[in-house]
Each structure stands twice: as C-alpha cells, then as structure tokens.
Amino acid sequence: MTAIVFIVFFITLFLSIPVAISLGFATALPGLADPAFKGNLQFIYRSLISGLDVTTILAIPLFMLSGSIMAKGGLSEKLFDVFAVFIGKVKGGMPCAVIVTCLFYGAISGSGTATCAAVGAMCIPVLTNLGYEKKFSAALVATASSLGVIIPPSIPFIAYALVTEVSVSALFTAGILPGILIAACLMAYTQFYCRKKGEDREKIEASYHKLKERGVLRVILDGFWALLTPIIILGGIYSGIVTPTEAACVSVFYAILVCLFIYKTVTFKDLLIFFRQAVSSYAPLGLMMGLAQAFAKVLVLMNAPQTLAEFLSTAVNNRIAFLLLLNLVLILIGMVMDVAPAMMILSPMILPFAKSLGIDGIHLGVIMVCNLAIGFVTPPFGLNLFISGPMIDTNPMQVGKRALPFILSYLVALLLITYVPQISMALL
Image 1 (tube, helix red, strand yellow):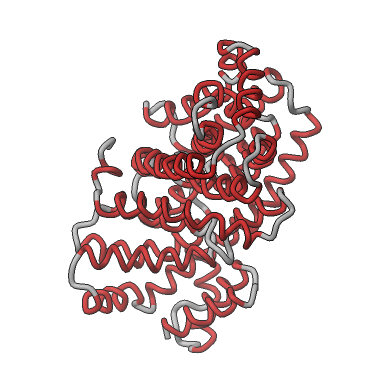
Image 2 (image 1 turned 30 degrees about the horizontal axis):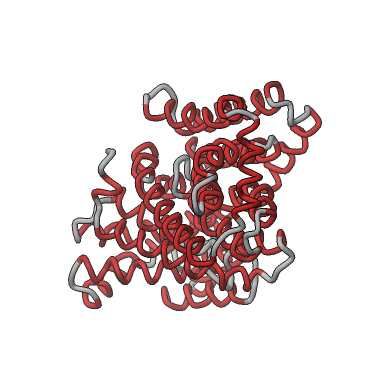
C-alpha cells in the first residue's frame, strides 16, 4: 500500500495538480481504501492541526514577511554595492559579487525564491549592462539564490527540526560552512567562465569607477544597516538572547525600522500590502506543511519507515553507498517538490536508518537541504528558473541549460559536504 500511495502522489504532481491537493489525497487514500485503517479523516484532521500548533512554525511566515519588506526596501542593491566596491574590479569580480550578495541576502530572507526575485531584479540588469550574456546572468542568479535555503536562517531547516526534534540553532550553525563552500565552488566556475569567454573591461572599469567615486566609506555606511541584519538575527540566536522564533519576530521589526525610517524606501501603505501578501503566501505553505506532517504520521501507521529501512538494509550495505543513493533520490525529488514539505515527509522516514549507520541527525539535515536546494534550478521544474527566465524574456528551460555548469560546481561541493561531515559539524 505504501508504494501505491507514493505512486499516486507523484502521478498527481506530474499532472500539475497543486502540491497541497496531491498531499491531501495521498494522505487520505489509505483510510479511504480501508475503513478499518487508523489513519482516517479524523486522524488526519487532528494531525494537521497539532502539526501546525507549534510555536517554532511561526518563524516561517515571519522570516518570509521580513524578507519581502527588505526586498522592497532595496537591501539587495546596497549589499551588492558593498561587495562590488571591493571585488568588482578583478577578473570575474562583478558576477562573484552577485554570488556573495545572494549568500548574504539568504541570511536575511531564509528563502531561495525570495533571494532570486530580490537579487535577480537588481543584479541581472547590472550584469547584462556590463556585457555579460543574459542567459549566463540569469543562470548565475538562479543557482546562487538556492543558497537562501542553506545559509541561516533557513526555512527548510525549521521544517526539518519540526519533525525530527533536532535543534534549530544547531542546524542554523551547521549550514554556515556548507553554504560558504557552495558559494566558493560557484565563484570558482564563474572565474573560469569569465577568463575563458572574456569580459568587456571598458564597461566594467567605468561602472567600478562610478561606484568608487561615491567613496568606499560612503558605500559601506550606506549598506551598513543591510550588512547588520544577519548579525542581529544570527547573533541573537547563537548568543541565546532570543529563540529562532523570537529572532524571526525581531527581523520583521528591524526590516520595518530600517526600510521605513532609515532608508525610507517603504511607506506605511506598503506595509499593509506586505502583511496581506504574507498571509496569502503563507496560507498554502502552511496547509502543505500541516498535511506533510499528517502524511508522515499516516506513513508511520503503515510501517513505511520500517519497510524503507528493511529495503535499504538489503539494497545498500554501507554508509558510502547509502549517502550516494540518498543524494540521487533527493535531487530527483527536489525537481518536483518544494523543499519544506519534502523535508517534513522524508526526514522521519530516513533519519532512523541514517542514525543506524552512524550519520548524525544534524549532518543528515544539511545533506537533505543541500540536495533539495538543487531542485530550485534543475530543469524542468526548477522554481528559480521560472523567476529568472522572465527577467530576460527567455524560456526558463534555456536558462536551465546554461545553469548546468553551475549545477556541476554545486555537486562538487555537495559531495564534499556529504562525505566530510566535519564541514557541517565543525562550528557546533
């Protein structure tokens, strides 16, 4: 029955049925097929409500709201200027500045799609005006934006913690070095590409000179409040002053304060729009997360974790083979599912067997998020492709083709993260 449930679930996804409806149908299917099954509609309803009745889950809509305010407030532009003034003059410096901007903006928004929308809207026109190819620029932003779900605060890490009882703060800490490593690999390919294809140095020098005329100190001071954002959020969490949920609340007030009164890029009227958009965007995500937890509990009633463990114990007999198989499966799932629901469905099933092989729960969480994040930019369903493609009036799949070298660079980092757990665990 477990196999039938998953087959039905993925068929509905491929038929472009909304994820929430697909999840709901797959969750209810065992109870509908067997009235004596404990996971009936009443059980699903209770599981859905109890799954959402958790304080930690409040961090997700709050981080989404603060990210939206900061995107409108132009923080991505100020971050880019700070990094460009330092590395923009070197070979491949401007595209690398975009990657670093995505890295820092991910520490503000906690979302890959929000990072892609905010950084892409500003940086893609800048790169194309400097002579870089449109598809290269869009592919760069689409891939680098996936760092938004790895660098803390990360919404998928919160989702993973909800169903595994792993510390959110520990997951946030564990995501720092992997995020930096992935960014470094993307920058290495960018450097190779720029040296091989060449750059319009005249345009780059002119743009850099214009930026430098503002004064390095002035550029830094202008971007100071944007740079301070991740320090306040993460510093508050790691120092123990606030919990991740409280830090999310702080981030909303900080975003309002900075964008409304300091940068003055947002009005009180805009705030009402942001609040309305936050509710409308979180409602379907909240439903998906609640259903994901109900689905996971139904799978437990069907002994799916034990069945999976038995299958894996016969299919793979060592840690190396298991991690390789896990990576392949997660990359495929990331193409068709959003990261947060995927984490909440798969984590309870995979974690027990992973622990039996000596894989730490925190390390597993990092591996899963890094894998599923590739789905943001993997054709044919990569969400970031559908955000960056229209920015250059190009078919998203064309952007996806140009993103393949970036994805290969990402995979190099992923293999290191997978088989060298110290990269994730060093800061704990």
